[in-house]
Length: 488
Image 1 (cartoon, rainbow, N blue to C red):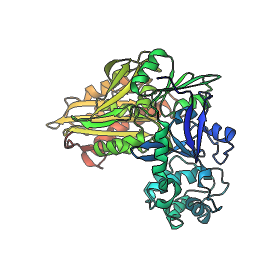
Image 2: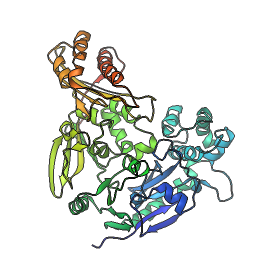
Image 3: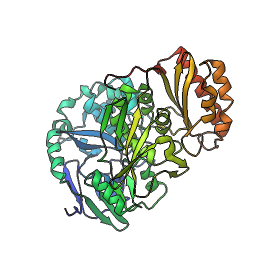
Image 4: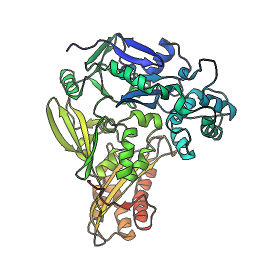
């Protein structure tokens, strides 16, 4: 079947077809410069401030699932078969403000107004599915939006008041989901998409087998899933990323069986959350601190692993749980322990043309204690200074097995082998833990940077182990003994 030579998606109410497209064109630039839709603002250009928030809808069964996204780091080439909703969509036909907008006005939720469109879009995404949200739900929805003049209390009040101005069920986006699902379905023709630009190609594989074929043809291509990392290569480092292979529509399966969860590498944090929270609640808490809602909707578990960052949030707890990844090249697959995948800074056990297909995560057993902690300068939406993950299996009060992994302490996510050895065979007591803490220097020689000094990282890492012990014997419930889920 011949490839289709145009990217197709809906922007608000209009079909967009692009047969020429630069592989590094961001959605923000497309909206503001190409379509003169300037309500979407550029703030940080790195997915951190939320001023550029839009909604991106994708077909899910017979419906459309909408999620907030940072237009500044979303590539236009990622949007084939999607529905993009910008702030302009909220403008009423009779000139009236949308209920979320009117609530922002009446609660004085805006001062300078630069960040306001992004806040409105985040609140709109929340209001569509949770018209009567709790304060905790509102705060979670706004983690990815920064305001430096209004303060958040009026914005929270706006979120609480929005439903007094109109019914979410009658909103045009909710009322039109079935019709938009049919439109998006008509765009999906099962063909590979190849679009050229002056700086190279953008390729959207038809399916996973086609992805494998594309990467065999172009092993040097940049694989883009959610672009939460690659987007910054474009906006901050001005890197040439062509050709790009877009995989955000693939590898989205989740299965729970035989005592483990298997995630397709393309599963986003948002989609994984319900499963993670149900089976490994400590990681659910961690997931709610990965970026903001916009990043969690786009970023993927496989991408967080494949980019090999030493401060990626998911590798340490996945290593502690004994996760394995399946790598695929063409029709061949191989399984690698996640801890063995990371070789050195910027180097992983992945051949050219090979990609992460899935991640298998064993569930903690009934004798396991498990915990994970993230240390950052600010609590929400911040990059990790150090992150510790711990799994200890006890037998008759003694440590039968200890797996301890850290991020931010070395050039890769890394196990604390000497600390583990100091614990195994000893009683699970504070004295044993404090003796093991003396072994950290054998495992790690952290660096100083703008996030934290080497001394702070080492002290924090040691104290996380002590915290894990204290909470394992005294509470709170973050550290719990796991009973295997039925069927798992």
